[in-house]
Image (cartoon, rainbow, N blue to C red; front, side):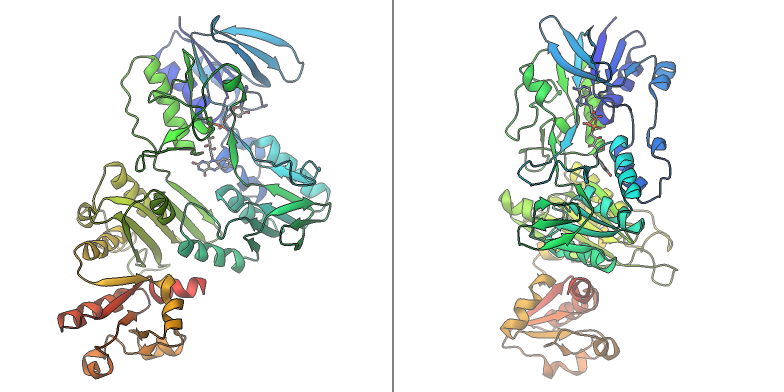
Length: 545
Ligand code: FAD
């Protein structure tokens, strides 16, 4: 019988064990987990802090007893694999409670040790008892106990990535005053600055004390000090500045690391050491679009890599085309999703790209609870291959981004997305889905049908004294407008052509770019060659101005 040993009992580890059992009823499968629990939902951890999940133990999806009974898999907790003998093919395991060391033989070894939160020792006070990170159930129980026992009112979350934001939201929901410190110029590195501004406004609106382009220097009992010199009140600190792959064991046994510092694997997830596979957050993967090596700490890739590694052991063909990095988070009343490359990725990798921003409604406007979806679609120019997308909104953004993720995976082009037939009823979307709308606009750009600039350039336009037309109705204009803009509504411009200059560039915007787009097309058809649409428009501007 094949002996399969797995290191790590959560995302990739538990998936590998279950897959192995499904392919081989006779295999001897042993999974070692150094912590006290296996198979827990890491992704749900922040929701215990906010009270949405009232019982921390419910985050554990399966116990070792269930693994034994249901799958005949030995899942052994509190057991750290401390060494491997690749020649004799055995692992040395330390019981983390008793210190006892035992040996277990393997034919195939799967490493899925994950990634650990980065805790820089250069930060003074990082080892204080009021400093935490969020990786497992023990962590969140410890955080909750500390917050309760010490009646903590103010918490600083360090890092505005998806874990930091989720922790931030949940602490606010539990009544804490939360400060969020982000070293970069905007939160969520997966999305671009224009969309991050909307996320940041959402944080401000929900009372989060946000500090951008600043970093943590020192932690005290009741406050923290930032690089800028600012002191922020905080009785507890949650570190969420990123994770680093757990490579110690792999390095110790001679597995090569890749250029990113994560464990190097081939297309079949084999490490450089025979019969040793590695999957999940600990490994280096290939980006499907850039073909460059990267790290990606997400649950789906970990689970699929685990399945593929086991399939390879059992000589099943696998297809590994690399990752695109699709993700979604919930933040107060906003959902934020993204897939593929953002503008920054495109620039870093030398892609010639264009993007469009559209703001359609999530469902037909007369339906209840209608809200806008901000959708940014990025595509290569002039080929039209879809490269990435970002979406923000109260609902429906995951659907839009999943559609784009599917298109990217199929190497889809803008022309295919325009014609993608998707389900529709007024409850669920508009007849042309948001992605269809974005693709239609993108097609116009690819065909050179009209010119546009992003709304992020509006401030520069104002400073340059550009001629900006606001195509909304007078009552909308009266409620607020770009300072230097002139109100010529779509409904009136045919009678007011004399007011539109022909000897300088004319920029047009409206609420969501739809009326401005129609006006741009009409003016182009009337022979105007100096008309430029402002993509993103007033709605997006309002969100971050
Ligand atoms: P893990 O699931 O971390 O499992 C590794 C396990 O190996 C750990 O339990 C560790 O204790 C154990 N281990 C390490 N070394 C040894 C050793 N030597 N011996 C024995 N055991 C060892 N992803 C998403 O896609 N969406 C989300 O919404 C999302 N939210 C998240 C929220 C939080 C708070 C966190 C922490 C992660 C989140 N993730 C999310 C990421 C996702 O959970 C991980 O990408 C996934 O769990 C990775 O699986 P893994 O097996 O590589 O690592």
